[in-house]
Image (cartoon, rainbow, N blue to C red; front, side, top):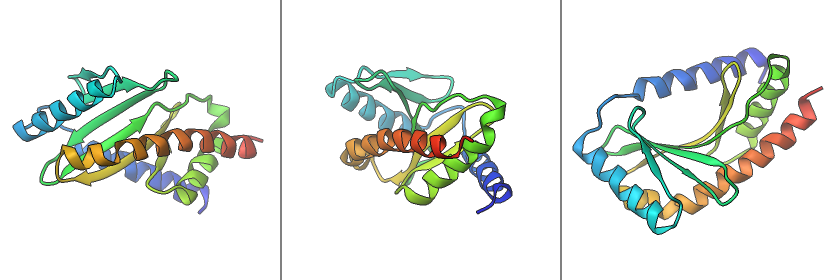
Length: 159
């Protein structure tokens, strides 16, 4: 895929996420979010809520930040996101190539960027919080591995 197609794909991903954005959560979404908060507390991950974005935030043992955003319901559309990396404008070509490579070879992962940051996410539909909890650690592992893979790809393409 060439850079223009990659850029268009990234734009479409950003637009689709924006379409799902909403200010107020429904009762079902609040219940879902509460269940996830309880689960993360039980797992000693010290979650916090970000009411402005209807998000749950937590850090792993290495200090990396993660967000869980709940959109829609029946089924729930959940975005599980790892804090990405910042980059300078002159690094953009290597960043786009690394995002493309990660998207091509990673299961369940989407990587995209704006003008200064890379985002690594897993988007999924689940029927309830138990579905999300069931795959939580597998998804967390995928996000961690994807960050490492991104850096490897970027180092290959940065020049």
